[in-house]
Image (cartoon, rainbow, N blue to C red; front, top):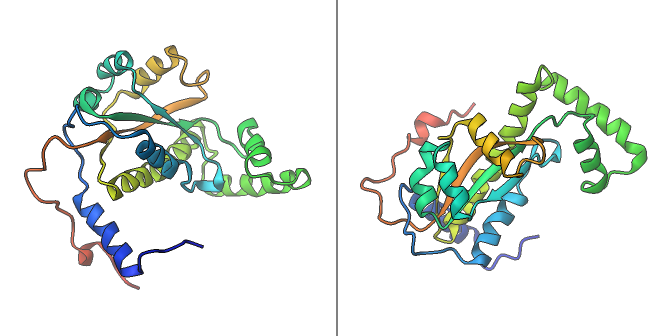
Length: 226
């Protein structure tokens, strides 16, 4: 149970204020750095995120090495300014080949989810029916796309967690997937191609406020009650 020092109304107000303040920051104040404790909290929000089958098919690379950041600029043109100025830069990797009978998922079931040994075959069969029913096993692309979808759940939670404590962020897909994977593989960061880059995220403090207010569709256009 949560130990709530604030009432429900105060919590809702804090969350919505943070979401209204948050925007896709274009350029960061390179002289302002996120504290270790604050960034550990952001990573923890990602780590605790839900995933399909509880599979956690992700890994977070926090790229702080300026040399590697510079190399990434050639293969992630949509992230150049963030690579130059963000306090912290994250590549969220998606695990490849997470089939119901894969070594990764079976080991995860045993060592992380702590399923009893005598239940593994039954659970694996249930996972097989799920993946078949969702056409996840059609080919390697559909299987890897399923993993990549999970990374966006972790990404969203990290962005919201950051906003809640006044830290700005930018999610990004502006990279050449094959080229970025090749670079990260060369750097020994993909565990022999077990992972591939799914999405990028920068974190830090905005250099200036956005020039126009946040725009979103109205609730009436987005929600239909049945």
